[in-house]
Length: 211
Image (cartoon, rainbow, N blue to C red; front, side, top):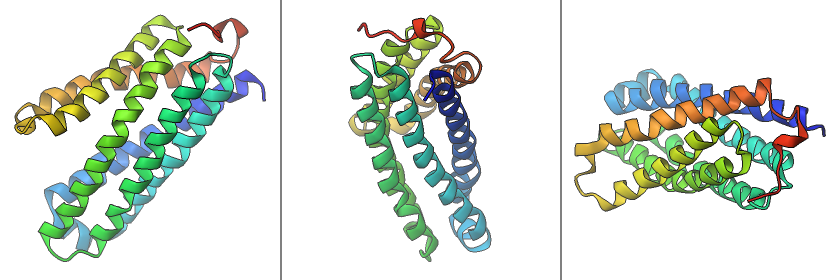
């Protein structure tokens, strides 16, 4: 397949992931956390669509992993980067298993327990995703500013996951960690997705085998 087509596939898949994740996280998951019983019992259809949205992120995560590997397979780190992204997708798939169980829960404690299980497993997956972004930043190199934001975002994902497990008072600094992860991640990944759609794969000079 032509590099330009692979780039467009990766860019479109990234966009699907962004919008599906925004809906699943900020509309569905936040609603469950704010009003567990009401959301599960009265808005169960929205929750089911949220679960489907999370599943779509996993599917298109695999598509992105494949497309980026094919696009940059000449680079020595491409295979390793792909493995880390696939690990994240697999772990995320396992995490989603907890959400349908929340639909059958009848108490607030049971519902929040399933959501907590989902978030803990997802956090572990994000540690590996962070590794992927660091390697991806090294692989693409250009545009340089996007590469740097990807590396920084990857480091923040890993630091945030480690902080969740190492800091007993993590909630005290939760907003700070969220900002440290969200800002470079949104800028880096969204910029990279747009670049893939508009510019990626047009020049073979972009694809280097150097470390």
